[in-house]
Length: 165
Ligand SMILES: [Zn+2]
Image (cartoon, rainbow, N blue to C red; front, side, top):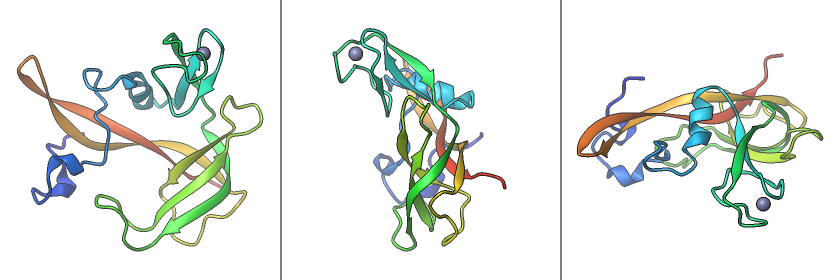
């Protein structure tokens, strides 16, 4: 990763149009989720008090309001339940086709189904029942200022992709 700034903005758009989260510990209370992504782990939060598992990860349990949460791993493979493809007019910074799917993570998963973007997938190919796998990819690093020093914060994000057959 060696980007400076946000390449797709090309100085034409304000930095507030950056589509990726600020993932650094200094700016994001779920930074651990992103740290886990960088280690190749797909995780979410589980409440230590009542056991409730929330997805996406939280900083507060939505059931009992406890702040005592721990990160647990989720399955990295699933099956497509339903999908959509956007071929035109995709948001700035994305390329068509923009594919999203509801993914069944299986009966034993603490989170049964999630909505995710599907990458590395040509238009018209994905269908119900297809197996997809978790994938982490680099996104442009972001300059952050900590104690008057500017440093580049490396960033990643995740999606799913069709599993190798
Ligand atoms: Zn709880």
